[in-house]
Length: 485
Ligand SMILES: Cc1cc2nc3c(=O)[nH]c(=O)nc-3n(C[C@H](O)[C@H](O)[C@H](O)COP(=O)(O)OP(=O)(O)OC[C@H]3O[C@@H](n4cnc5c(N)ncnc54)[C@H](O)[C@@H]3O)c2cc1C
Image (cartoon, rainbow, N blue to C red):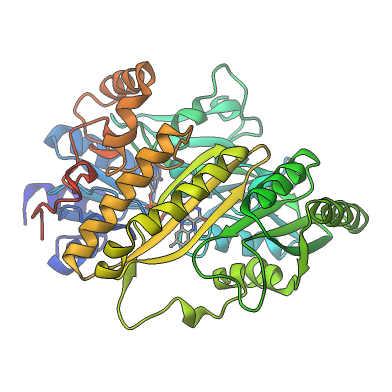
C-alpha cells in the first residue's frame, strides 16, 4: 500500500479508501461525453474534519483532488489522471430543519430529492424542486454547479436558495458565509447577505475550484396549496416566444417550458409549444392560470391537453413535455447528449431556433451518416430571460459519431456566445471556449485561484483556471486523448 493511501486510510478508516481498479474506472467521468483520467484512489470522508485533513495531505503531497458529488452533470468533468477522488456520498445527513427561520441545513452529499421528501412529510419543500437530475444529484454538487432547476420562472436558479455555506478552502481552512460567520450561534445561519461581501456567491457555480462545500443551509417553504397546468400549441415559433415574454411580464408561471424542433408532441398541430406550471394558494393559482389562458389566446395559442404538462411535472416524465411515450426516445444502442445550453435574452430565442433548424438542414448528410438524433430543443424561461437546452444525441459507442457530437457542441457554443448567450455550468470541455472570452473577469478568477490554491490542488482543469484538463478539447474537433483508458 502506498504512503498516500495508508495516510488516507488513517484519516477516514481503511474501509472508506479504495484503489481497486474497478472503483477507479467507475469514477472517471460524469454523464457527459468527455473521458477523464483514472484517479489513483477514491476516498469517502464522513466529516468536515476529515475533508480538511485530506486537503492538507493533498497539498503536502502535491496530489490534485477531484470533488465528486454524484457526477450527474452532462458536460464533462475532465477528471485528472492520478488524482485523489473525494467522493462526498457519505456526507449525506440532514443536520437541522429550522421551521422558524425557514431553512434546512444538510451535509453536502445529501441527495436533493431525498431532502425534499423528508421536508414533504411536514408539508414543506426546498426553495427549488431541483434540476431534472434531482433523484441523483447532491445538494452540494448542485450548488457548486448552480444547476438550472425546475420552477426557474418564479424561484430562480439553485444558488438563489442558498442562505449559508460551510466551505473547506483549498489549503484546508474552514469558512462560514453570511450570518453563519458569527459562530456565537452554533447554527449555519439565517441570512446570506450579512457580514460584508456575499462569499457564498464565490462558491456557487464555481464547480469546486475555490473550495469544497461541506454543508449547505438552504431556504425552505411550506408547500403551496395548489398546482395548475396548461399546455398550448402555436403555429409559429416567434408567436410562442412573444407569448412567453408576455407571460414573463405578468409573472404568470412558476415554471414555463417551450418545446420546439425534434419529436413533435403526438397528435397535435403546431410549430412550438408552451407548458405552464403555476403553484400558489388556490385562489391565486386560479387567477394566474386565467391570466395565462388569456395571454396564450391573445397570441392565437391553441389549448391542448394539460395532462401532458402534469405528467412532466408530477411524474418527472420528460417525454411528456411532448406528450410522447418514453419508448420513442429509446433505441437498441446507447445515445449520449453532448449538451450545449445557454442563457439568452427571451427575444433571441427566435434567432436561435432558426439557427438550430437551419443547422439540421445544412448538416443533414452528416446527421444521417452518424445517426444523430434531435431529442429536443427546450427553453426554460426564467423571470426575464431564457435558458436554451440543445439536446442533440449521438451514438455513444461510435467513435466518429462521438467526435461529430463534440464538434456540434463546439459549433452550438460558438453560436450562442456570439449571439448574447452565456452558458450556465462550465466544466472542463467548455472552458477553452468560454473562459478566455470573459476578459478581465477571467483574469480575476485566475488570480483568485492562484491565491486560494497556490498548489493547484482542487479540481485543476475545471473552468480552465488551473492546468488544462486531460479530456478532449472541442477546439480540436473532440480529438480523443488516450488518457487513463
Ligand atoms: C436525468 C438528469 C437530468 C438533469 N437535468 C438537469 C437540469 O434540468 N438542469 C441542470 O442544471 N442540470 C441537470 N442535470 C445535471 C445535474 O443534475 C446537475 O448538474 C447536478 O446538480 C450536479 O450534481 P452532482 O451532485 O451530481 O454534482 P457533480 O456532477 O458531482 O459535480 C458538479 C461540479 O461541482 C463539483 N462539486 C461537486 N460537489 C461539490 C462540493 N460539495 N463542493 C465543491 N464542488 C463540488 C464537481 O467537482 C463538479 O465540478 C441533469 C442530470 C440528470 C442525470
